[in-house]
Image (cartoon, rainbow, N blue to C red):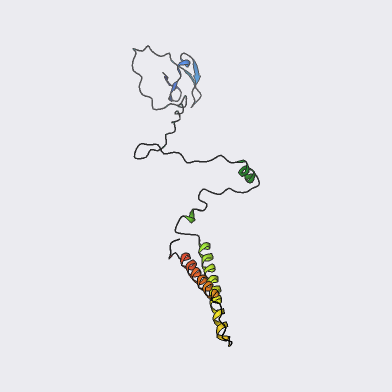
Length: 180
């Protein structure tokens, strides 16, 4: 049990270790010589509480063991899995290649894609609609200009209609009107 000591020079109070009993030391505040008294036997007067513990810092608290959070049913939740880096990923990082973050590609599962994906969807949709109109109009124009009465194949018309429908669908998905 630490020994209560008071400096006669400045009045500072602190606790000295048991091993210092009967020895002399210096005050940590003013540097005056202090004699550490020998403690009284166990049945002696009770020591008053000391507010200041200047002689030795308190020992650090022991580390608390890791306890994972538990769910409502009392089962501990598993910590997130972080696989060790492979030799290939270590080599890539050595060359300055930054690995993907954990949230990379998360937008694919959300209903809010990045703006560039919306722009690309609209652009692809417009191109498909224009190509579809070309495929639809070409056979029709050929039939109108043909004076011989030959039948024109309509495969191009069906392909053009399919392209138009696909383009409209791409634009609608880009605007978020349809599920995908």
